[in-house]
Image (cartoon, rainbow, N blue to C red; front, side, top):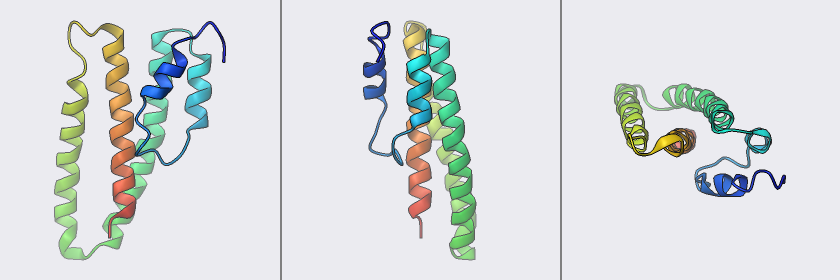
Length: 124
């Protein structure tokens, strides 16, 4: 790890791991190469996009897997979950948070999206 980036282990350690499907080597490589906050944000956004694709696959699979009468409720829950995730994560950015608040928002979006994808993959 480059001595120019003493913050990288802290950022990686701050990412919630309990819901992760496994290490994300692409995210780690991207963060290692990041030189500024906007680079870190790009890394986190790319990782979230990958998790969002997994979430969408898991959602479609869950809809196909569950009983027909439960599908409308799952659609409703998913819509509410998206509103909750977005509101929860936006909470971390405020006028005093600066660029670290932006990182907090992106980390939250990544963690929540991973957690929900895991949940949907286990849904019966």
